[in-house]
Amino acid sequence: MSIGNQPSFWQELEFLANRTILIVGEMDEKFLKINTLMKAFLPRGELCIIPQAGHCVHLENKEEFLKTIITHIG
Image (cartoon, rainbow, N blue to C red; front, side, top):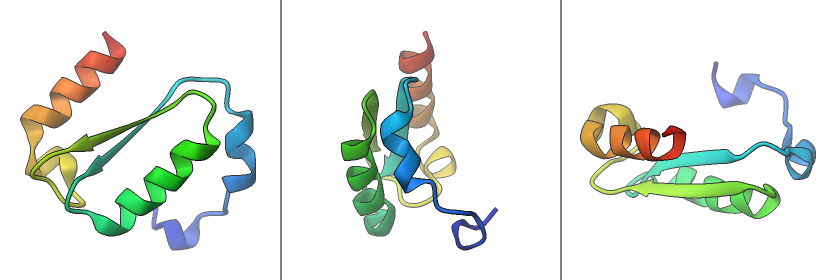
Protein backbone atom coordinates (compact mmCIF):
# COMPACT_ATOMS: atom_id res chain seq x y z
CA MET A 1 0.00 0.00 0.00
CA SER A 2 3.03 2.29 0.13
CA ILE A 3 2.80 5.27 -2.22
CA GLY A 4 6.20 4.18 -3.53
CA ASN A 5 4.59 0.99 -4.84
CA GLN A 6 1.53 2.58 -6.45
CA PRO A 7 1.35 4.01 -9.97
CA SER A 8 1.05 7.78 -10.30
CA PHE A 9 -2.42 9.11 -11.12
CA TRP A 10 -1.64 12.83 -10.90
CA GLN A 11 -2.50 13.28 -14.59
CA GLU A 12 -5.99 11.89 -13.89
CA LEU A 13 -6.93 14.18 -10.98
CA GLU A 14 -8.42 16.92 -13.15
CA PHE A 15 -10.93 14.41 -14.53
CA LEU A 16 -12.38 13.36 -11.16
CA ALA A 17 -15.96 14.57 -11.13
CA ASN A 18 -16.73 13.31 -7.64
CA ARG A 19 -16.31 15.39 -4.54
CA THR A 20 -12.94 14.53 -3.02
CA ILE A 21 -12.01 15.12 0.61
CA LEU A 22 -8.31 15.26 1.44
CA ILE A 23 -7.64 14.78 5.15
CA VAL A 24 -4.20 15.52 6.56
CA GLY A 25 -2.70 16.27 9.97
CA GLU A 26 -1.36 19.77 10.51
CA MET A 27 2.00 18.38 11.73
CA ASP A 28 2.51 16.09 8.71
CA GLU A 29 4.56 18.55 6.66
CA LYS A 30 5.27 16.18 3.77
CA PHE A 31 1.66 15.17 3.14
CA LEU A 32 0.32 18.66 3.88
CA LYS A 33 2.40 19.88 0.93
CA ILE A 34 1.33 16.97 -1.27
CA ASN A 35 -2.36 17.38 -0.43
CA THR A 36 -2.24 21.14 -0.92
CA LEU A 37 -0.84 20.59 -4.41
CA MET A 38 -3.31 17.78 -5.09
CA LYS A 39 -6.27 20.01 -4.16
CA ALA A 40 -5.25 22.45 -6.90
CA PHE A 41 -5.79 19.71 -9.50
CA LEU A 42 -9.12 18.42 -8.16
CA PRO A 43 -12.20 20.20 -9.54
CA ARG A 44 -14.26 19.33 -6.44
CA GLY A 45 -11.43 18.85 -3.96
CA GLU A 46 -11.52 20.03 -0.37
CA LEU A 47 -8.54 20.01 1.97
CA CYS A 48 -9.31 19.32 5.62
CA ILE A 49 -6.42 19.93 7.99
CA ILE A 50 -6.78 18.18 11.34
CA PRO A 51 -5.21 20.07 14.25
CA GLN A 52 -2.90 18.37 16.74
CA ALA A 53 -2.25 15.44 14.40
CA GLY A 54 0.60 14.15 12.30
CA HIS A 55 0.61 11.31 9.79
CA CYS A 56 -1.85 9.03 11.65
CA VAL A 57 -4.72 11.51 11.83
CA HIS A 58 -7.35 8.89 12.66
CA LEU A 59 -5.34 7.78 15.71
CA GLU A 60 -3.79 11.07 16.83
CA ASN A 61 -6.97 13.18 16.87
CA LYS A 62 -9.89 10.77 16.62
CA GLU A 63 -12.57 13.30 17.56
CA GLU A 64 -11.63 15.84 14.89
CA PHE A 65 -11.14 13.10 12.31
CA LEU A 66 -14.61 11.69 13.00
CA LYS A 67 -16.20 15.17 13.00
CA THR A 68 -14.62 15.82 9.62
CA ILE A 69 -15.87 12.53 8.17
CA ILE A 70 -19.39 12.98 9.58
CA THR A 71 -19.57 16.58 8.34
CA HIS A 72 -18.67 15.57 4.81
CA ILE A 73 -20.78 12.45 4.46
CA GLY A 74 -23.77 13.69 6.45
